[in-house]
Image (cartoon, rainbow, N blue to C red; front, side):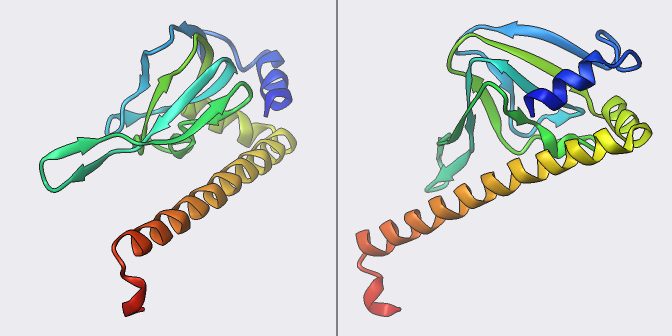
Length: 157
């Protein structure tokens, strides 16, 4: 994704301050809050962030398990690529980070106007999302196996 973003930012019509902005975030800060409406996606230039889920245990205790850590070159917030959507996870910085926040509407117009770059961008995004889905499936399978073993449920299967 890094080279695709470099090409994107080098393109004159896709200007800083209008289509995107770069900013720094200190370690420990929340970048995205689950449930908030999002209209942007993020490219992580430097640093490490953690994607956090949210769950309620026993109807009264809320936990935020870490779903994954993302390093420089990763993209997140991509569910908001084509429309404003509710954020599906929170993201916090584990280290000082440098981010590009990209307006989804401006990126969509750019990708439509530049079909070759659009295809390459969406292909890379699809690959990243497919990898994340594979990791999520592995985690779910391991959690299910752990739960089955911990609660002696396997005798009922």
